[in-house]
Image 1 (cartoon, rainbow, N blue to C red):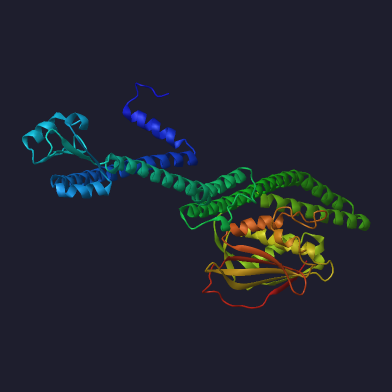
Image 2 (image 1 turned 30 degrees about the horizontal axis):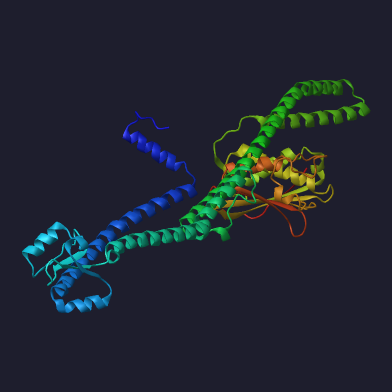
Length: 481
């Protein structure tokens, strides 16, 4: 209930707020009625006063004409025959003449008395003494005419109003206002309920008016939100994977660190035993034990080395040297003794990046290839060639192997964490994920495919450190452990 102490401005604001809280249909009904009220008042004050003046003018002209005919007795028969007027004759009392008419006719016996503002009757003295004549214009022709005009105007306006309301409420508004708004509400309800099949408004339901433009804008916003949500989910998944990778890295570094001391002690004991046991049989066994201990220490040192904080300085990194170093570390695996690596990288090829981190990339790729190729006849080939990416000069480094290739169901997700077909043996499914992250941080790209002749191919594109000054020196090296 309004507070009587509120100012006019506060009352207006409250009224606007109450009107704004109404639904669309009640708002339109209020506006329709206000429009009809304003239209009725406007038409009434525009038409009726003008019509009244015209009727009054016509009445005055008819009175003047009738007075002229009434003055001339020769016109009296014609007036009687018309049947439109009420004619009578008698004394003043019989005709109920007003006193002003009697006095005027007594003073002017040859004239007629008429006053439309007082009476609709015209009076005249009769040739017979003491008698008067009177002729009356029917009221229906003038006063009744204005009344009928008012009623007719209101009826016509009411019919027009009802017709407009029916047309708007049954055809126009449902099709072009209520239905589009309901589509909005249904789509929003579906979006809140995460119903993706119904959260977008169908293109066939959208018109080319302003509401249609708002619908198109909403659909585009929903598509972008959906894409952003998917990207957020993907980022969240990757963050979880990175956390898992970080935990595994810390665990590996911790285990490696703990193993270093006992391995060093074990190696010392073996060396001492080898010096004090000159027996050929014992020497051979101790040599094998020493070799395995040294191999375990190299593995441990590699884990610790990769867990340390990397230098972030970017500088030219020769690819051929990087591949040789990665193969030297990977050759710790016994399988490397029977596998051939063909390092056909151009000696002049170099990329711009962090050498330690890029070493981890190609070590992961070579280890994956080493696990995939057969123990006998296995071959890994590394080649380089100039390339471009987004208009930038890049160097393409391909690592090909002659293994069984990548399964078709794994290939689309090959760079996701923990995706591997060898989780039960040597593979962990982490190498390619880590490699992808490092390559992207260097502004490059990495992709996987299967070779037409069999085997897998991983292509890495990195920024070429000197695309215009590279010396072409073809030829590669053949390496094996």
